[in-house]
Image (cartoon, rainbow, N blue to C red; front, side):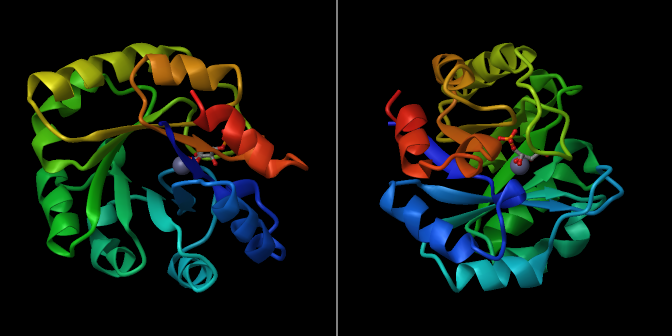
Length: 214
Ligand code: DX5
Ligand code: ZN
């Protein structure tokens, strides 16, 4: 079954604790936490203190998506509040070393690619990844439209993961809804990140079921 990782980027943080309980009951698999520094992406979100506080209110696994410049500077600190910790291939860190550092803290490593990056560029790093995240929007904002180019990338990565005989989850992030989720799953996605689609709904559990039972 497809795994669901709701992104809290567009959530109401003052009512998030109630929403987290609803999401747990709805059977989501993890919680997606978008960290933005205003440099790697043109937006600023939240950092370690907010994630620590969220962790006190949920048992869900924390799937941290770093959209920050030179992320290796902060891996040690973010590892303390992450179950999956991902950073961007394009962000200026030594890729293999950073993936291995994440694993050295007992945290699952995730490498993320922007829409401008070809999947072939990261094939050599797959053995050091527990998850790969394909962005299906330009990183920085929730509520954008899904870019169909992501489907071919998912497909290429799925094939390469099988070819290298690896156990790597494939995650997709951006513009996921009832129309785009089936396409992403068909192309090979194991984990769907969904922000707006879940948090803008009155019936969050219904939306989760809609995209989980694919
Ligand atoms: C965008 C973030 C996404 C975003 C997804 O930079 O990485 O996780 O919150 O939001 P939706 O599902 O609304 O596109
Ligand atoms: Zn994200």
